Length: 106
Image (cartoon, rainbow, N blue to C red; front, side, top):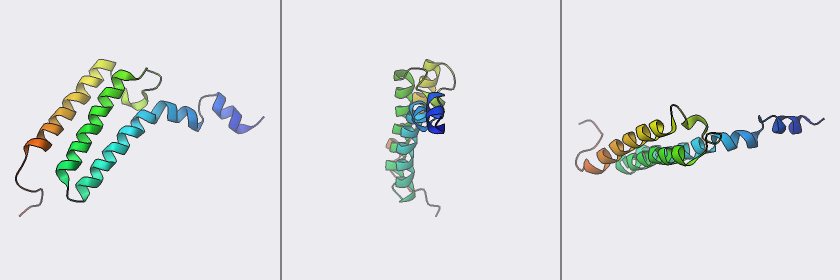
């Protein structure tokens, strides 16, 4: 038999892994965009994107079935979503309310 066919049937192929961990990869992609904005000295926009990534994690944790949530699952569904959402709101509030000053030390 073909080794590729065996791995996809057993659930260890690339397609099976993407099905399980695709939500986390999406969250990471948005967070990396935020990191890129922070590194280019647009820290407020980057923080908003990072908060948005965590808020996306909360939404995906509630919306996806258990077999598709992957590593976004730590505790129970609603406990995870509550912790993700609380952290996202904290980051967003900080990013949107700090209006003066920079991150550079004088």
